[in-house]
Image (cartoon, rainbow, N blue to C red; front, side, top):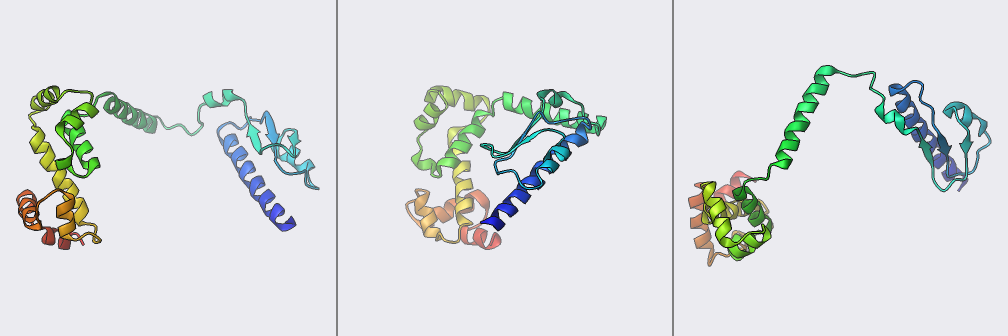
Length: 206
């Protein structure tokens, strides 16, 4: 138990001191406003106050080192104007993508792929998930020059390609999971989608 406590204490000391020094890299004059450790004071406890430049409390509910929140506004001494501008541009682009909803065709395709079997997921179910009527969904897809049938086929192709890369599934199992009446019907459809038979596709991606 004693050895375990010493190892734990050493790990906590190294981690806490490392964090403190990291803060000091950004603000050399930074001092903690509170320092506490969950274990009892060791024989060398006076060193803690010297190292952390603050009174240290032991036998606390948790180990903590706290700083004034004003440190969050301190500029980094390692600022790089070029890097900052590049990151700012990237963040603004990502935020614009988040604010702009994905096209309905993409959202429908992603939903069908998640369900795994587009043939057993009705258009009515998809429309309701998007908060639309079937008629409204058709109209929105048409404005994007897409049809539900076309998206359904693309989703089924993606799911089939993913399943075929799972070697634990036979081609017959993939066919039936996708709702085909027979492996032959699945082979014909997959060849039409990709130009490859399911076996050739699986061999190519093995």
